[in-house]
Length: 103
Image (tube, rainbow, N blue to C red; front, side):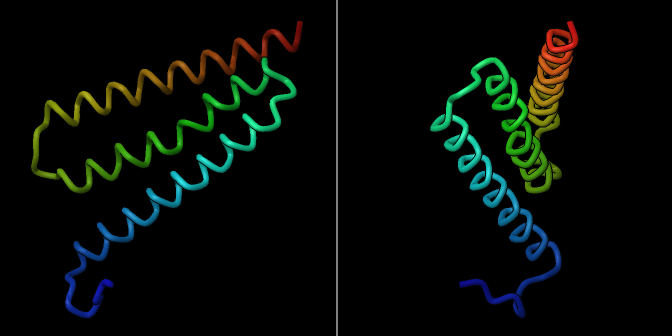
């Protein structure tokens, strides 16, 4: 168990951020399992699953950036590049799906 009275503010922030990352992962797994269990509309649900996966990716990259503050700049640049490419993928899939619905 954590003794918050003996921790400095930086350690408390890291523990709180880790808790939020785990919460994000839990909610993501719950949403993914619900969408996969009730697979009724595959076209829309594929896009929704890709969008759902954004939250844990952002959470993990932020957490690693918080822990590895003075660490490898090249590694963090790689993680940020992956995050940005995934964001571009999500936006393009969302726009493609939106354009297909409008037509």
